[in-house]
Amino acid sequence: MFHWLEQRPFFFAVLVFVFVSFAGIIEVIPDFAKQSRPTVGTKPYSVLELAGRHVYIKDSCNACHSQLIRPFKSETDRYGMYSLSGEYAYDRPFLWGSKRTGPDLMRVGNYRTTDWHENHMMNPASVVPGTVMPAYPHQFDNIADLDTAYAEALTVKNVFNTPYDQDLDGDGQIDVKLGNYEDAIAAAKEEAKAIAADMKNQKVKDAVANGQVPEIVALIAYLNSLK
View 1 (cartoon, one colour):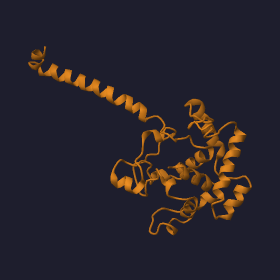
View 2 (cartoon, rainbow, N blue to C red):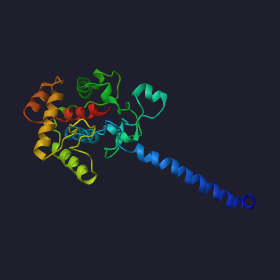
View 3 (cartoon, rainbow, N blue to C red):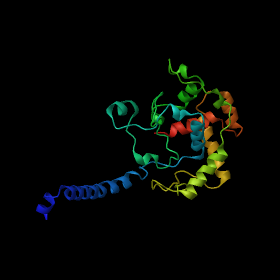
View 4 (spheres, rainbow, N blue to C red):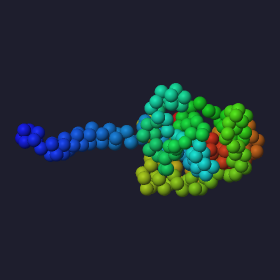
């Protein structure tokens, strides 16, 4: 049979292609399926974080910032551990990005604080001299849309089986509570209070104390979750 194949290069090439393709499928698919599952510690976004993600998209932050650290030393030295596919399990849509006018933000929660983000969004040049990033003072006045964020969380829970109201790490505690509308909104406002406590802007503090959540608070919640 081998002698017959050696005399017929076309059939020999087809057979080699079939074998290589089959071996590749056997090797790649199981690992791909494993890597696409949520990595340990990855949790769904809270309602407040989702509201902040909406602000991030609305104000086109993803036009200048990527959220994808490539496995190169130049990238990991600057931004931290390279990105894993399972870290995006609950991202809809993905915000990988293809342009970096500003730095990658995949792990910004590891090295920037609430106070830094507050100053940066109000006056970028005050913390990054020479930056081309514009200021976003409207985020300190506009109120975040918690209703839409809750609707998204409920949708992905019901349609995509996103594990809200579950104990993901086995410690006996629910990791990200959703529950009903009233409880979810109340939890988002409590989360907002914790963030506002670390901010200096009195107008923002007063708004949160009165049960409102400015966009800047929601955005910071989202940025702090990127680790």
